[in-house]
Image (cartoon, rainbow over all chains, first blue to last red; front, side, top):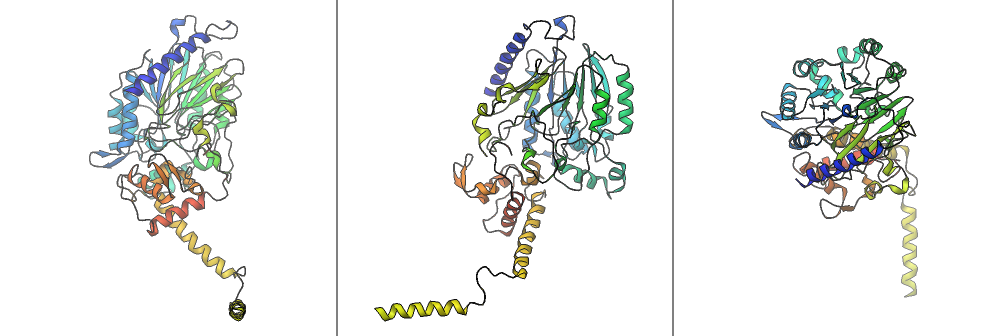
Length: 358
Length: 134
């Protein structure tokens, strides 16, 4: 209860800051909408990893993370126009896990859409997920913004169809983050073709928001914080004036700017992941703009997990991270620097204690 | 008095000469055998680390700690907030076995516990300690 109050207060505070932003000279704020009443926000819940034990038993910790996110999203003021679920609803893609996850999500009182995660996919290649939630990739328009949802966690046909004796083993091999038997994620040709056709119908000035599970950039191959055909997808998005990519999968705050494309990650409700920069033994490209969030405290099982409230008032994405037991973080698009930024913690001397502690 | 000291020195000289090799003269066979023993333990540790059988709810250590990241074996013993005192690494491993894995703790000298510690030590070799960046 204390936490809910705190996060609502925090949101109100952030809302105030956003209102201040709109008092900037109008030439700096490229409004996507004629009327401020068209401004809107949406919430994002991701990476629940609902894990089946046996019978009616599920891993309590992951269940509680998702239940709490749903409960808090229901209390949001102002109400978000919709909620996205960013993928990895299940841990091993089973019917039990997807059903149980869908049931927890059904308590949500807002319109809901889903992104496909690798943990949802590799058991039956998305068959049951499609039955519950609809197509694996699609697009929609909302108040002047074009939203695109991709299934970015596909991989080579050889790996998917030929390598494993059973579907269960395929799922297990892909579920291990640091498993050398895994394979890099990709959007693939079929979806790229669809994406091109979808984008062709959109004016270059319309703000575009892409939802994907994997980052659509190359961060760290060793843990599959990676999308193999990222450059091709980025090239398709290049002609558009304002493009934001929001991705899950990494269970931590990351942000980046590549050309015209802003990248923002969302948090997990299940567990946090360490930073891949620890690992010097593999090629890696951690985005330069990333500022590490506070490190997790294992004493508090919700620590370094959370959900986020997203504002697209001026066609760019501002993320308000609600972090349990950590200072909440705001990653806002900086109109002068033309990139997302967590301004509070940019400077090395502005880092707070847990970031200096192992 | 004087003579007994003398005899002690003689004894120690004899002992030195009696040793077959000097302390820094390990044979390649020695090194290979020790490395093999260590790597066997590391391998067993990696299997346990990624195995759902260590606890009772199917959760594996690697879910939160891919490549044993964020384990920092070199920093133990240290004060661990949730236990409220300075503890060695094996006690922290047991905390994880009891809590996220909802399983039973292992004895300090259980070969499984040794293997887990060997694995995290192996994964962390040569990694710079950078607080807040793991």
